[in-house]
Structures are given as structure tokens and as C-alpha cells.
Length: 147
Image (cartoon, rainbow, N blue to C red; front, side, top):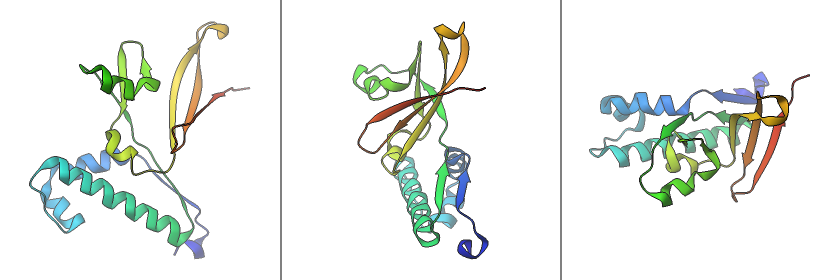
């Protein structure tokens, strides 16, 4: 299908919303996964694993790049150890965490974090900064400059 139509990339915006919508109704999840889970957490993890595996198989079968977005949400942590896991995305007093948490993070190959920062040299103009984190935890930062 994709090879004949010259499709090279699929973008899904937002994977977290898809999972949350399916998470609202166990009936729909039963149809999608062909199994029913009584506990919400194992069900959500199983759904994430099923979606990730399906996307991986499509990528290999059709030689596609697949990009999915997982929005960030504000989290307030009582436990300092948990806060340190997301230290690279702390902004002021708000702690940002990927909406699907660490379970989705363990299922993906590469991760891009897009965030807006203020640059003191640019008179408080907001600049787009991209940090790319690979599966080994190595981070590279890029600034997007408009001309």
C-alpha cells in the first residue's frame, strides 16, 4: 500500500489523546485489543505496547518513518527521586512530564523534546529550543533561529 503510493512518513498527533480516549471505555478497548483488562494500569500499559508494536511493524513492512506526539503535562512531585527523573524538563515551579509517563518512553526509539525558552541575550524574546535524547540518554540541544 505505502510502497506503491510513495508514502514515507506518518505523523500521529497526539498518541496520548488516542490512548486516553480508548482508556475511557473498556468496551472499545476490548474491540481494539481483543482482550479485556479489569485493572486500569495493566490495561493502559498493554494498549501502549500494542500500539507501539503495530507502529513498529508498519514502519518495517512499509519502510516508513513514524512520528507520534506525546504532550507534556504539569506534575507536582512529593518525592524528590521521582522529580529528578524529569530534571531536564523542569521549568520554574512547574514540573513537566510526558503525558504517558515512563511506560511510553520505554517503548520508543528516539525522543524529541520541544520547549520554549527565554534568552537573556535576545531581550527576553522567546526562542524555540529543541533537545534530542537518544535511547542511551545522551542529549543534544539545538536553537531554532528565524531569519
